[in-house]
Image (cartoon, rainbow over all chains, first blue to last red; front, side):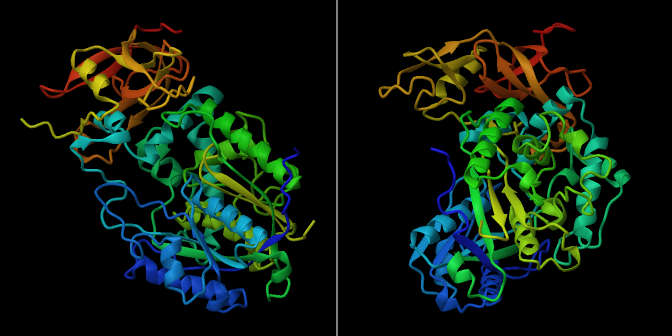
Length: 396
Length: 144
């Protein structure tokens, strides 16, 4: 078994839309999502009645004493399928890690199998009132009983443990990471819909940013926002009859960790992430050097180091050096997160990465259009539990 | 004075862990078929996946090594904000590779920590009913 994806290049992205990304919207997430999905349908040259498939991963917000109402705090595939004026015959939620890549994978398989012809993959995220992750609990139940009684709670400090392990082992510094943040925020500054549009930062801004849990500072974490994006996927054959240049799915992989997810070490994450990368390159028949547009998930900045190393762009322990000296400038050979990533665009999970992969390969990136844009990778989440999809502007 | 921080709530799996902790014993869930420890406690042994799971909580040495740590400069749990800064460690117990837990490092935020530092358990009574296993450096400069 080679692992080569049988249906590679058989499914394509035909259009997309992204909402305004704002800190707190006055509108319900459902209203934002329906408007955005309708724009995506129109962008693909279709009518709502053409859409017969829906998928998303609607995880988060899931912290504090906050409860989620579908259509308001979250938008499930089922909810959107009932509110778009479509004619659904396939609706499926994704429950694993890497919600955006995971739901793209579901959509690709549904289209390749004929379960649906035109699928909306959406991702909607809400920033609830109050402080994000605030957890005023006095009883610690379930998984929280092992961390909250100690004062340890929340993803931003959870990533501090493997990141500190990385720094201690490989001699990485916050000065090294400043290079990545400055570049990402520079990229985002030029993107009109990015939350941090027109707001580049200096190295000093980063180094002086408020610390959450050493070595993680506030600028290492994407900012929670209200926003949504929608992509229309269809078969390659149908996509060729639609107005936009099709962007083909060349293959994918999901993180399927062999290690327990409780308090994993850096080595655990790297082993499982490297296994994802092996499956990805087997699925696509491509390798890291074949990719023109690398969009690696950066909801927490250290994840970019892990993706760079797992995917094979540099040896393990070298990512903090690999990104220095202009190596990731958008004008250079490795335009890492030219789409501004999550750190520049806001907490829309894998949306900025997939959006940039699509826009570049469809030659719709405007002033940002890269000289080489035939292939792209878009990742979401951690490399051990998340996912990655590779795209191509040609069906070969 | 009321204790305002989160108190661990024992469930069907974790009850013996917290009961032992109250008696200042670190006891970890152990598979009676293959001897593998699990933490957090589970309903299926990841080692032998026995269809008739049989677990007991066995006292362990309370000695381990520091895998990583963070100095908390903020807390999403408001009742910990007066403690800032404080040190949190990821500890791997001596008994088994990958057998890890999270705890406070009682040497505090200004101690010099290194990956692989030897640590040992210390119990903190937080309420008359609940105690937390915490950790401290076993002795200066001692490494695994």
